[in-house]
Image 1: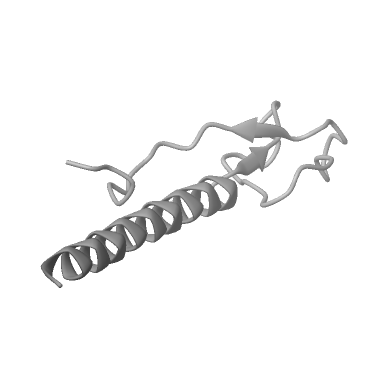
Image 2: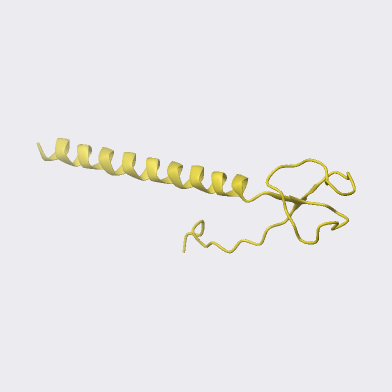
Length: 78
């Protein structure tokens, strides 16, 4: 009887740990996707950024992805 109880508890803990890891991974990927910003390489509009790639409305050059500094420590496992 004890063996069945231990096996059930081990299965429960294993299943909970796996789903938590997957949820964290999905949240981190969504955060990385949402953090992408685009700006004109000529800085026609100063530091203005856009959510999607496209053309600068002033000089018509292709917008380039801007490297965003990570300020949120939620993705870190300390």
